[in-house]
Image 1 (cartoon, rainbow, N blue to C red):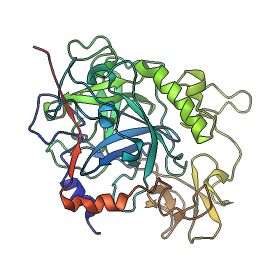
Image 2 (image 1 turned 180 degrees about the vertical axis):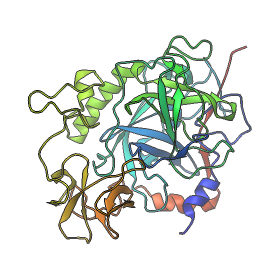
Image 3 (image 1 turned 45 degrees about the vertical axis):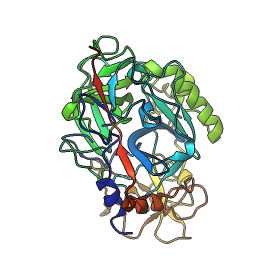
Image 4 (image 1 turned 45 degrees about the horizontal axis):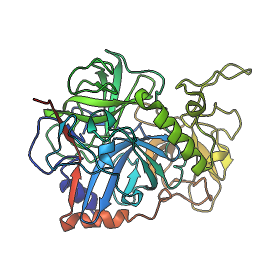
Length: 407
């Protein structure tokens, strides 16, 4: 089924309306951005129901929990996608079975995908303005070798002039699908929540630029890589993005993360139990500490680079377990990215959709059963058939919503 993914993208109008341009939109690719190989905590989110579907962006904030925009999981109250605050009502979420997600930087057939078991939206309101945030609990945890969750900054609002990076799977500024995860750094927060004026609610803030159709639900990442905002809507030509503030939804996020941890059978991240986006300093030892985004302080145990392993959990933080042939013991090896190079004559390459320093033919060892990870465990959702169906005139959309002011 060569080229099926490209066919799908060619048929997609964005998380955007299939109708004409509007003044401000919800579901917006990163205009002027570059292909992103480093933010493996940012996922392409898709839903499908019957002959329709849509694409958005989401962020993994716990092993089985995605953060996105509510308009990415719910139907709109009109087909124009214009957002008139007070009238832009969102319906009940689509069923969890409709959703699947992948963090492959260039999604295609065979990409790892994960299904959903629950979708959560705020109970306080249904308007796009001010309530455009949602959480998706996955059917199983994403293995650490596939993605380490990002930390949501639940304790501090973004400030005017604060730098951030936008990441998403949307269209380019020319309106063409990028087909890749994109990022744009060096952006600045325009105003903090509660000070942005008409059309931006107290739970939202304005960014700078660069957010287009399909980027909806994607993150604004601060200088430390923490999630401070979720793309809700924007102006024409990928301008004036409006973000839902993560800090404004602290209780909603923490409560859902607690339930997700219970369902996933793991200890909640430090930010869930402490209410702080900063991990507590490690007591004793050499003072080196911090936390992975999963929430626990960095452990000193585990195999080091070059030592043998049978599962991802056997290796220290920053390493993954790989085997050159299925059934053979693995070796702990460092991950890599566009900014983190490899040593020892190895190259940074994508091996089963994970970037690591490895020779040819290397395959990742699944932490669950020691088998090679040809694709991440998922719900059994028909990823390949969905791609194949792209040639059957599906009404796929890249959702976006356009914000307009009340007269």
